[in-house]
Every structure is written in C-alpha cells, then in structure tokens.
Figure (cartoon, rainbow, N blue to C red):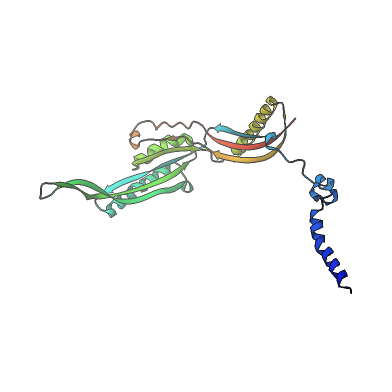
Length: 265
C-alpha cells in the first residue's frame, strides 16, 4: 500500500537537478572575482602600453691611448721544410732580441702565429696529342712566425718598429692602440648614456603634455672600443733614417642603454 508514495518521491528527486539547472544565477552565486573584496586585491598599478616610452641612448668617450700592440715577424721560404723552419728560427731570434733591447718585457711578448706550408707553382704541360694541361709543382716550403708585442712607452714605438725590421723581421701587420685600463672610462660612458636616455624621455614626455613617472626597466646594450690600426710596410725603415713616425690619435669606449619609462599626466 506504500508503493505509490515511493514512486512520487523518486520522481521529485529526479526532477530536482533539472530545476536547479534552470534556476537563474543570483548575485550571491556570481563569481567571487567580481566581488569588491577581490577587486581590491587587483593590481591597479599595471602599466598600459600607451603610457610607456622606450628610449635607446649611447655615449662615447675618447681618450689618448696609453698602450700599443704591434704584430711583426718573419717569413722565410726554402727548398725543404726543415730549411725553412731553421731560417725563420734564426731570423726570429733576432726579432726577439731587438724587442728586448727596446725595453719590451718578456710578459709583453706573445707568439701570435706560427705556420709551415708548401708552395706550389702551376705549370703548363704539353701532352703527346698536342694538347696541354695545368699541373702543380712543388716550389718549396714557407715558414712564418709572428709575435705580438705590448709597447707601454709610446714615445719609443717608431724606433721599436725600426729595430725589429733591421734585426731580421720582414713582415709587419700593423699597430693597434688601446687603453691599458678602461674600466673607469667604461663607467663614464655608461653613466653618460643613462643621462642621455633620461633627457630624451623628458623631452618626449614634455612634447606630449606628459611627465616621466618612473623607470620600468633598464637594459644594458652593447659596448665596444673602436681602435685605429696603422698598416705599415717593413721596407719603410731604412738604415740611417729617422724613426718611423707613428700617431696614436684617440681611442674610446661606446656604451649603450635601453630604458622603458612610464609616462603620467
């Protein structure tokens, strides 16, 4: 006699999920992220792209060099490999002696190139049928030896070059001028680049009717120290002639920076 009651209850329970699914969402059931408490927790200081300004700036500082690097050596060609190496060794000993006599310390001398290779002549060979073809024939062996010397006294640079040539050096790659300690000048260039970036930002902001609010990011860019190189020929130094004239000019350091500014009204 109780079965009909159980059937009605079962129907009501089955219909409950459908009714709940069709119920409209009330304010209490709205997502928590839309509540005032959650809104207060949001970051209202986020920067919009239209309120930022990206500035790239660089600064270069030049100074007279206080050190020079010269690369010189010998190149000798002989019929055999051993003869070529012996010839370059004898000539190179004279170069080292000349550099030492010029006041170059052993710590300022470094071998920068040493090679031995065969040299071939290309000749034309006649064939039996009257035609000809090119062939290579071993002509000898070439031995080279290069040394890089750090010259700290630039007043003696020209005389040093002449002495190594007179002592047997027959190859000369050139002179590179530099600053022995460029840490301070690098910092000066960095500081100047940053000042220039700020000045540019203030200029653009003023033209747009805005002000620079704060710096968002700072990215250090490239740094380089361009150095002039003087190329020379060994035969320029003649016996009894004045020392080879050498002009150091200026060398410098360039630093760059990229800064992102926030602009405000």
